[in-house]
Length: 233
View 1 (tube, helix red, strand yellow):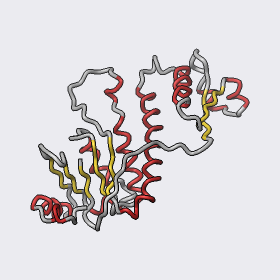
View 2 (cartoon, helix red, strand yellow; view 1 turned 30 degrees about the vertical axis):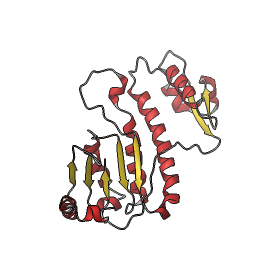
View 3 (cartoon, rainbow, N blue to C red; view 1 turned 90 degrees about the vertical axis):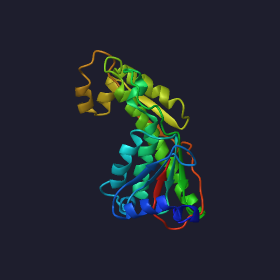
View 4 (cartoon, rainbow, N blue to C red; view 1 turned 180 degrees about the vertical axis):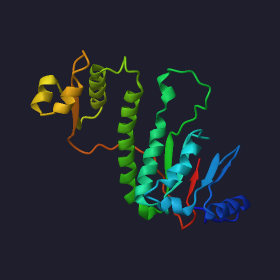
């Protein structure tokens, strides 16, 4: 992306590219468009599928995002790294403060759109990956929201009812609730032993996927040539 003349010949971008080439994060913010923030991450991080170094660079940046949209350069990124990065970005939809348990004055700007910069030839390959990772992230967010609810409210009965409510929105997904007797019949002895404590209904649930369900995503394609990968906000 940075090989475009408008960016390649820019002195600031050239300085940031040189810094990224040294293995350091290059980040700058603007008070006007078209970008609120441009970040160059060292090339090695985009191919590191073992230690998640790309996420190590990105987490502090998204702790206080500058805008609601991000443009991710997908021209030189390992598929595993891209999948992990997308899950991280889609998970930005949920924050602990959403529960309203504590009043804070922190920045309420959060990510709402993720755009992919890639060659036209890569769009067909990346489209299913974006859909899959957003579907996974949606499930992670639902689980995180349940886990963040205080224990006096998040009882086993509440969890079962919430699971059924979430499942109702997807015709291809079926939620089956197992009562105490069904748990025993299924041979789930450990689960039954752990569940003996609560006085409320002891139950567990299982999901059955009749067909693959994918969530919607936002992505854009543009012709690109090799360059230092970038994240723009």
